[in-house]
Length: 138
Image 1: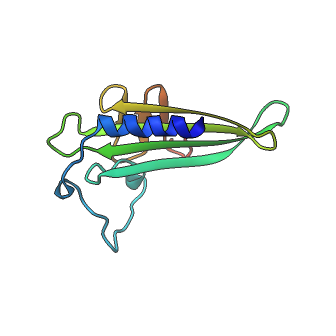
Image 2: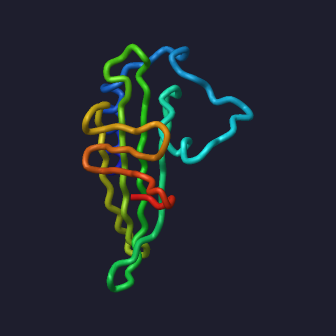
């Protein structure tokens, strides 16, 4: 069943986007010097990028959970409307119990989905990922 869900998601993702010519996007360049926090943010000159975090959480009884959150941005080209499509995936696991919970979001650019340039600040539906000034995440 997990594979069926993934195939359906990939089909939906493919039907919402149309390929943009390669010349619409920049290519990574050797020797690029990263500058933070600017490079934590979105780079819309590139066709695709993602932000990925993983970790462990503990509840009140000191039970451990594993988590991951991934936000994707896919450019459609400068003359497309919307010019960006956003996908996000969240997962929560219970190590040792073979339990895994996950959900996805798929939205077009607009009030419900964005990624800002200049610093990490993104939204997809009711999920957000934002860097605090002290370099922690919200």
